[in-house]
Length: 106
Image 1: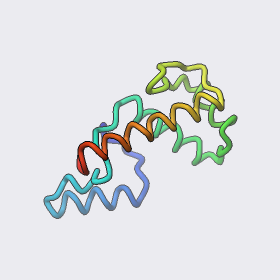
Image 2: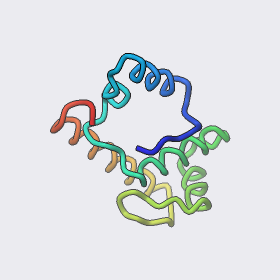
Image 3: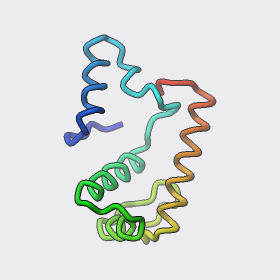
């Protein structure tokens, strides 16, 4: 996963603790696989929308479309409320399956 300068304080403290203790796997202990660049871009875009007070799916989908964020699985950029729900559900299911198969610490 690429480094992102605008992490939240909780994630930053976990990553710092993992580095300081020499246990880097702890920084991603709940991941059964690495996050793709597209998933990371979506996560950043969602965080940016939420930080601006955009919380409902139709408005979030509009922001994703405006910013031309590529959907990680379908590769679409014509975001709708339904596409957002589908992408998030599919990504979550895939991450759950990866965790089940690989345990923690991708």
